[in-house]
Image (spheres, rainbow, N blue to C red):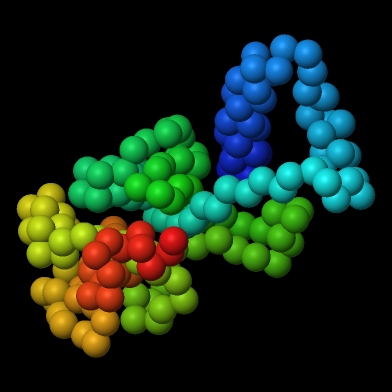
Length: 184
């Protein structure tokens, strides 16, 4: 499956740009080739800073349709088009990819969109500052909500689905002034 290679190439490009910026700042130290970096990263040097980017990968039936939903309805920024497509939605990164059969690194795993929309295994949770305004905005852009926002003990919340049936929770906390305050 080429998508794994494309994801690796994308993040390698991002890392290379970051390394080029750091190199310009340092001007005295050159980054080793990628092959050496892999050895270095897996080596025993415990003083090296660990770096991590977390993405959510959604396996979809139609990449263009899903990208249009996340871009046009929710306002995500397309970082790279193709198979897979990379998006940024506020403070998360999404990878939108088609399904496929097993690969050498996951020989018994088949990637496919959700088969039963009523069985929940993962969902996006969008924490907002004004649920009514987001509900109105996203509805005007074509989002189909299951219900209007409902009042719960510590939040207001409602749910919608993306084109492949992934559940998306939209919630506004009543415990703090800003949704980010919960994660500070």
